[in-house]
Amino acid sequence: MTKTKHPSGAPWRNFYGRFRGKTIRASQHDYLENDLGPLSPGPVSWEDNPDRTPLNLATVFGDREIWLEIGFGGGEHLVHMAQRYPDIGLIGCEPFINGVAMLLGKIRKAEVENLAVHPGDVRDLFDVLPDATLSRVFLNYPDPWPKKRHHRRRFVTTEHLVPLHRVMKPGAILRVATDIPDYVRQTLEQVPRHGFDWLAEGPDDWRNPWEDWLSTRYEQKALREGRTPHYLTFRRR
Image (tube, rainbow, N blue to C red; front, side, top):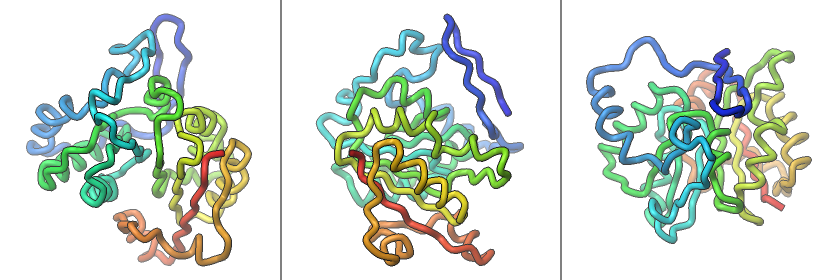
């Protein structure tokens, strides 16, 4: 657990997980030093934005519709969506700097120009996103925190879902992909309680991936280990 302290009486926030792995290659240092800054959606951190002034995303994306991927891992799904939907503006949020470096390499190779990257806690991003900003949100294979005493650390809790609801537009779509049955249970319990409708009409709606889905490395690992993916779609009320 990492405990981060914010200045000027701002709340403490516990972060459960890692910010950095053991090794970052020289090429990845190059990406982080030269590519990350220009891809910022604006001042998000408490140090850069202690007054929590809302971001002006029109300066980043113009009048594009804006989507968000929470915890993009190695970034393959995020880059895939940016390539498939060039008229959409996408924000990727990931606190693990090694994953951020992997994404930056993919962005450089793909030459996509409709992406912004926040290398930190999504709760800090929620603080500075204006109300009703996002049209679509992706939560793909989030950390399952399998032990019961750790379930409160999962994303699908009030701490995350209340601000998520605020920053999504009415009618916006939330997609959740997971291979953990108990994560499915908690998602179906908590997400509707926080202002979202589950859109499934039959088993195929959670058994089959979305038409524009790209299977991530996490999903491929789950399949190799015999776990079944679930694809849950919600609409923000």
